[in-house]
Amino acid sequence: MNNRVRRNLVAVMLLVLLAAGLRSWSLTGDRGFIGDEIAQIPAARNFAAHGQSDNTFWHHPPLGLLLLDGSIRLFGDTPLGWRFRNILAGSLSVGLLFLITERFLGSRRIALTAAVMLAVDPLHIKMSGFSMDEIPATFFFLLALLPLTARYPSLPRLLAFSVAAGCSLATKSYYLFSFLALLLLLQMVCKEDEKKSPAVRLNLFLLCIVPAFAVYVTSYLPWFMRGYGVVDFFSMVADSLWDLDRMSRDWFLEFDSLSTTLAPSRWFVTPFIKPGAGFVNSPLTWLPVLPAAVFAVFKLKKTPTIPACTGVEHIKRFSAVPLLLFLTCYTPLLLLSRPIFIYSAVAVIPFAFVLVAQMLDSLFVRMGWGDRCYAALLLIIICWGGYLYPLVTGIR
Amino acid sequence: MARPVTAGVLLLFLALLLLSLDRIGKSSRHFLHHPGTFVVSTAAEPYQVWSDSGVRGRILLHFDRRIRADSVTKSLQGSVTEENYIYRAIALNLVRTVYHVIPDGEWETVSKNLAEQGATPWRNGFRVLLEGTPITVIRQADLPAFKEKVLVNLDTLSWTPELLGAAARSMKEKGIRSDLVTLYGSGAVKSEGELAFLHE
Image 1 (cartoon, chains in turn green, red):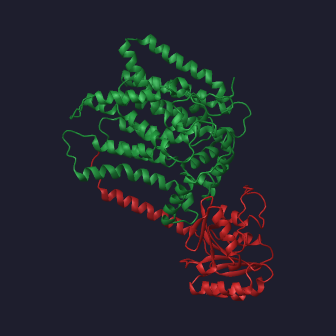
Image 2 (cartoon, chains in turn cyan, brown):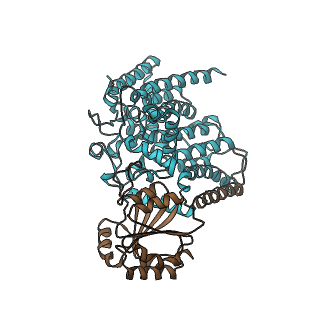
Image 3 (cartoon, chains in turn purple, red):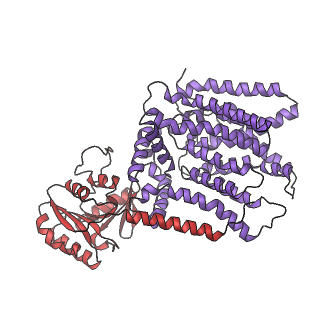
């Protein structure tokens, strides 16, 4: 094991341990159901047993419910059983973000900054502490990115990407457009001695789509076992999309508190730290996101187009991936007509933090600030997260 | 880059997967080998008949003024009542889809209520979703033909002999068949003969 791999492994382990410790808040004290758990736990058990969830959860793909039921079967109908899935997925997400950022961008500093931001982010900590499906959906998508960090994705890596992306889409559909964007990007990755024939392109496309779709449709197996066929399946998916569009306040157990949280257009613009709000943003790390996105666009335009795919150019091309993923995940949420609440931001913030970390790194390099200043930055981020921690967890 | 994997292999895999899921779904529907008609004394008893007979994943033709799918009390451990037994049958997968057939005389009121609630028009009736399960609300003349045997559940209080006769003719014309008929209400015994053709 070489030095770089060893250091990365240590960094990942420490990050995951930190994240897991912070996310275990919901296992302390005598906490009953939190948030949607009162409906989601029965829905998970019903779906696994009978293929029927409830009035809210039937709209969404069911893999999250199946995993939740599995966690309850493993750890019992207890707070640990209800929350283990999210605590694990949320913690591993931090490690994954470090790895994929380090590999895509070739910078351990950017990777560590982004991962620390995610590790101490109050929204991610809050949602990792109970059962909301956004956390495993994000985890699976980050997992899907890992195989793509290789220079030339091989068949097993593409399969792994597709299966993990399918798991994400079978949990929640936040990353649909990001997935499609990655398919386009993969079509562009070239090898100097390989001809890009239509057959190769078609094979690549199907290799990425078919396993993902297979995971998605197979997650509905308990539903099929209610006696439904494939035609019924497509009808049901169409029904769910149509019904989602008619979303009303009755859907949400805590609509009144949710309705006071921020709309997507204000997530990265307005500080929102309100005692009792449940979900908050983190102004220190969220407010720089949009400027960081603009900075990334500006930096992208300044990079000259390089036709050949050698190692350095490969990384420069991949430096656009965080921006691509941020835009393809955030933009649809901005454009949806139905209510979108701040907890949906958890799907966007991993890539948002990479953009902020990229911008900060460029600033440090330009200003000639060394490792001590960088360590001070990480300390500020951690202390800020610590300051917000009692607000979202109730732990003093 | 990935070694070429033929598009055909991937598409074949997908086709086999979808065929398998379709087959699993259709084989999950449990029918009775010996068709029967049951006259019950209360509106909640059909659920017990269905449960005891072992039917699963079925289409239900529910001839009644009321849907009886109250889901307010969502516990599946509570009592089965006249108000919730259809919901319970759906939740526990005895029934996978419902055609709620409204007596003609009540149709105007029902359709007005459904239109006000924003129900989706479906042919000459309406379609609503109960936790994802489609419930089609129609008149007897608009019953579709079914490729499989259905469950028939009929309230003889709201379906008078005249209305029942028209419904029976409509079902006969469309070739509708049933392996399990449940009847309740004061006219249930008399109605048994009218619906005997469903078991042919």
